[in-house]
Length: 469
Image 1 (tube, rainbow, N blue to C red):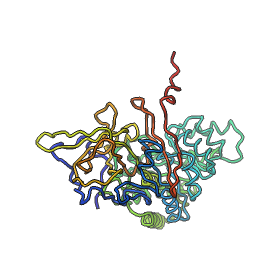
Image 2: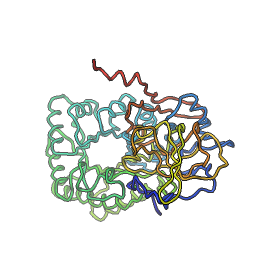
Image 3: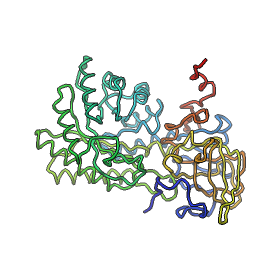
Image 4: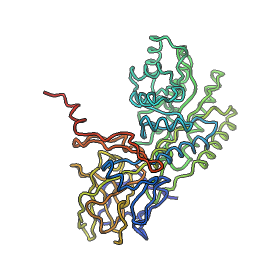
């Protein structure tokens, strides 16, 4: 089993017309189902449709670029995690994509919501998510963010430093709370997850958590346990994002549960909760083959039961955070092609550069992580053969790449619509106004009906922030 590694070179060897993992398609019009949401297909004319709505109609109605979310698909993925991990708490990753509608949907399907800033917390609260089903992360929470969590009565605050423990204790003393805030200790397990270094979060040399190996994690547990203002509920481990194998979870669980056993031996108190994190991977290209939700659940249950039995401790109440696995596959990005340029490569060969009306401002991941994506011609069926292409944006930046390598029809031309799957996680969340480009809207589609979740920004929106003379 192989997977596209997100840490690949942003500038591949130009003498190679296509990377070794990319296969020439038998039919360049075909879709690979596992890259797309459940209700995406192509009609007889090759036009991409989602839940009964064609992308040509969408483009006419809301314009491009646009993020198109398959509502039933997202809700189904949330429901699948709730069912497969029955008895656990499952937290939707607000940082992957959050708006009030999505927060309501995942809560209705039985999930909690994980947030990491005051902004995300405010959106979830406005959506009506039950505060006890929410958790607040963050390595540098401000007083305002902690106060917001305290006043709302959040189900848990995941602490990340000794400074933060002191800060929460101080702020608790300034208010009259009905109960002590529930606190989890984020631990660093030393697991080197197979992912990009920027989204691997459990190795020692990074900003998150308390190290188990150095003894910091145990000291933090004691600090909270001895603080009369706080209720210690357990530990939180997160090894990274876009993870396919469960081997890293086994190591992380072993080390974290050993910490639980050590704490119980020293205090006589068994920690009641353990969050294993998550960050489960999704398919961005044909090489990605993520595990099914039931397989993940079975594997993680077995890991925890085995480790607890070996340590002679009770299995704690468990929780996970699936990350992009819910939001990512549910959405595709839709663009209009503006220019097509053929570039002759040194040593022979031609690469077709397909420029769209979007770019790194609506999906920074390719430039930031060298993430791999796929794309398809979405507005018609082509009879031309495949040509190795690079899908780029409109920004004044050489690294403004959306899809580094893809086979697209050789007759792709200005005016065509192009769709990029798996755009639901971190695309809109990490979007910017680089070059003063307004951010695209997010629309959802269900049973032939289109609903705007986030409207398109306008130049007037940008100018409203400009208060200079």
